[in-house]
Image (cartoon, rainbow, N blue to C red; front, side):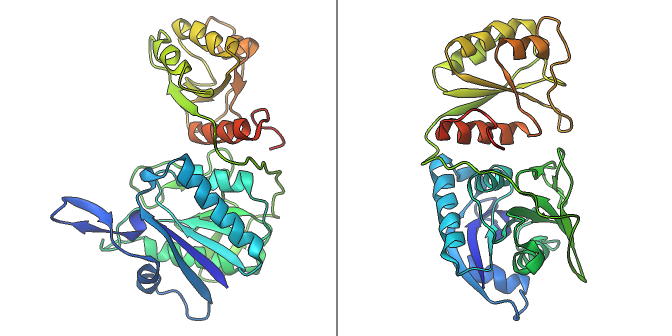
Length: 315
């Protein structure tokens, strides 16, 4: 049995002329019927929520995580399928992948077109995700994102396009499989990862991009608000010289500073030693984000701080 957990998102929306835009409309049973899920796949539908993904906060994300963990631990589901809005799907997938150790596949999907759009992509994505969740070869692959026929590791999937149906990619990895008319194909064996188990997401982590000529004032203003910060720098992790003292003040305050790049591809490397260069920032205590988007780096820091461990510990 596949446990289908509906949370809302564009996949569940229709255009509302009176409101002047798209709003949530369909529940799980409606969407399954619209998508035409094959009758040979047994499933159970749970309407966990019906909201845009941008309405999710740390408390709701943690509640969703706990619900997924409980289903996985029950032994009653062969797989778990989660429909989700694409806005923060990469954060949810990363959170689930980092904190749930489960053999049953946990598959997230969504849509870029509303259910009343003539080119609705949600039906295909839902059918593909159901096939992945039910496929025997998915066992052990953990959390996955299925979109536009491709299967991504949940800790690598990043939304790369604001409105194209092929919105997701793995800029720090590659698709782990695909869904074809002949079935689900995986590119390799399941990847083992260590998980963290915080009791809650009870720390506050900010994400602050630097801009041309940045003087660090925004970083300074944010310091009293956060337990840690992801600084989104240029290229391989460089920032304007005027922002360097603000980074150093975060570090001296005993607060974690993770250095990410605004570039979608490539990782932060401490290559440059000029004032504001990544090498000096790392020497001052900043931590390179590793193979993570800024959003994923923020989620990793939030999980790590909440669990009381160093950024990226045992990843």
